[in-house]
Length: 389
Image (cartoon, rainbow, N blue to C red):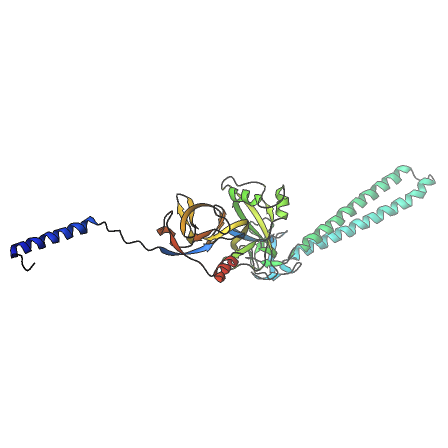
């Protein structure tokens, strides 16, 4: 080019530059290939699992007995304190018995008088009987004497009943515990006047060697509850029920299991619920009447796939997972859930044992996308399976 004039050199350079630009623009540049996501996956296993549901419950002693006086009088002695544990037959209250002892003494005196009159009437009959046989006196006199003896006998029976009644009333002045249990709040104090017609009892005595725990179940829950156990009648199903747990107010599980032993005969029309009763042994007397808690019932799920809730996507009341097919391709699967716990779903259909699903990042993937699966270690997979057994 050194031999070319300068204007021609400039034209040539301009031409070559334009050609290079046109060639560069004519080539189509491919976009850079997007890197595949690396996501953790797990292999689904089918197993048996149990879910639990809790129902508010109230505790009552097997016997909650109102201690009431049978007679009227002044409360002379109060031999028990609130909250005390008493044995069956233990003396609790004493009512002033002076007037009742006097009544008993009067009844006994009346009985003695009646018995004396009866003895006299018997002697009269014995005296007249041979005289009538010998025709010394008329039979009318003997019949009159015998009638007097029957009257005297009736008076004795009446007086003896009076003595028994007075003894019973005197016995009512000492009030004992009908069962062993704990004494509740005392309704009267020493020196108070008491009566059988008092609206408030002297005390409430709770027998708590066993306790009844009452709870209610909705109609839907009750129908599911009945379907799960063998038997054609409710009574037969109750016999096949497993034990239940009582969750105390502090969320601790009561140490002894209980058994459901009663189902109410009808649903409450106001709440649409049915009442059930479970009985728990209480030898340590930890539970008291009036305690509250929750009954925990277990539901058994056979042949379900156990997957983490974090591995699912919920859309319009439907639950999906992304299965890994063909090695690294994602396929959306609709699943049906039969139960759950705090962390996992129990899947009854939609995926089968051996299916691999992604366990996180599900909100950032789509159908047909390819990923790099991160397989869990054998120990980690085994630990996840054991956790739900």
